[in-house]
Length: 522
Image (tube, rainbow, N blue to C red; front, side):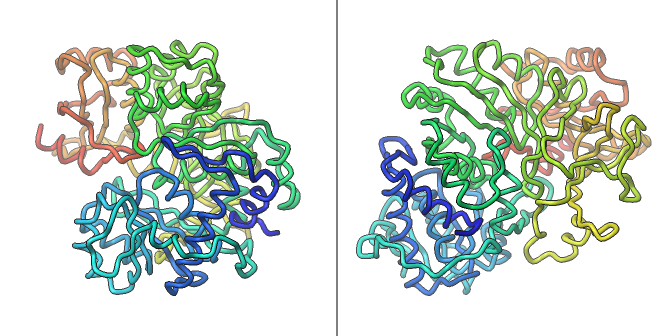
């Protein structure tokens, strides 16, 4: 057995085959049943000519088919490629081509976009439609693909070095494929509450002896956080629960119905509508033990509101990235508004200065959060960005996360924000995350994204795009609110109000869109 997701899932399925592995709506599959479905899909893909190292794109909503696709692709040593289901034709064309995908599983709801794009990507030669009969010539329905395929295994041996790619980003540029070995991604995102395995067989034993936890990643599986949460759940023998799409009422109803114990979200974009729905609804949340946010900013005001609504639930804010894995936990009492501090819970996490040397705790020197050890291999088809992001210093390979930070005297890491989003106004740096967090503390602000727009005198000025909560607040009111908690140069000079904020399905801000909206408002 290897540190390979397919090997490990098969081992877990053999150990606890009768335990429920996955629930989505009215579908419930045991570990053994999910393994058989993945076997059928794997044999179909292999029969269609998909071989080791080749890439299979997955453009689906959450569901049994997505989970089976991840497993099936890895079973034949191919590489799963996550595709954002909101992408329009130009973006799809880019991802299909950049990833060198040879096969695609897609939801029939997206067939118009797929049909318009696939003819321009000759390498993409095999299509499987989920949720209905395809109209694209040569495409096969998911049920047909599985119908006559072998339900047993019989696959060649796998390796801990098999490739796993997660496409990420797209808020300021086109998405990039983060390359991992299966061993490294598994260990980088290891559940910190479970002892690290000394051998792959330990994971199977953990699952065999694990309690009947019910775990629910709320984000879409096209986001790395949800994929990672899926593997974490299975490798401790838990039952996994999905909703097909994010809808706050559906999430709470599912938590009540399935008695979910642990919930994973991605920041305010999910937490805010969930808090509003929980406040006005009547849901039994007594089963919920942990409410975990990761992958996006979770502001203090929103966290406090969730905690008030869930007084008996542990609220956690995790720090990490697609390239670094899960690395730290927010220090109690720290928030983006007051200053965000994280305590690393793995070794080899620090802050490197401009000379790529570790920052001395308490020195106040600003640098980038960096990790060595279990990190990604680099970016697919982008050696230049790989060399810049993964430098080798004194023989040690590091990942520079892009998060600007310093190290406090107690060893905690104070994070200011993403360097790529920092606004330089008159020589002062403003981190959008801090200003966004303060704005969201205003009772009339539902959501906020802060960006920089050109200014003749200062180079850039701070601008905020606001989605009001009810009546639209005045600029003067927002200005007064911000000045209570922010230095004057951080306070937005321009406010643009929108009916709905544009974010990714996982809650990531679209800064390109926000800048355009703010410039129009100016």
